[in-house]
Length: 204
Image 1 (cartoon, helix red, strand yellow):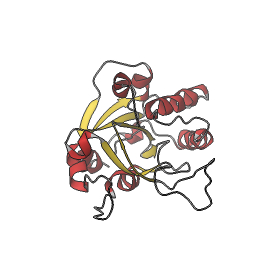
Image 2 (image 1 turned 90 degrees about the vertical axis):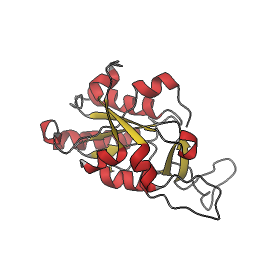
Image 3 (image 1 turned 60 degrees about the vertical axis):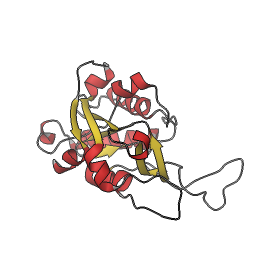
């Protein structure tokens, strides 16, 4: 997934609710509305290689529909270590695995699978992650389950030429920057909250 470097740091978007303050802005009706919107936008609102734009597009449409998500969190995930040439390695990316039976040359379809990106942007509200690149169908899951399947279910396969980072490496060296949706949409230059993936998961 190729991203413009400047946009990568302005747009890092994971709507993420930290456990200690999620009750301050979570709302069941808003979560239901955001989930329905995400499902409707999963295909028509998706641009390959533009994870930040995809999430910001979802946030704008949510605002247009009157959903109060300005204080939800936008997370940008980058690799600060040296594994996989400093790229973010994921395990369940959209249309990235083996070709599905029945696929044609004109319309190839692939299972979810491994992929490496310069960074990744996702959105989470009230502890639920929204990610247009997670699997082949719209899935809204709790943050812990999402990160486990998308990032941490990383097993070395000696017979496969793919890249391997490893669970411990990702927990230690994957950095997450958190901004509010309001700050992300306004392209605020204020630094977001930085934490390691491991520290983030320990707060859930």
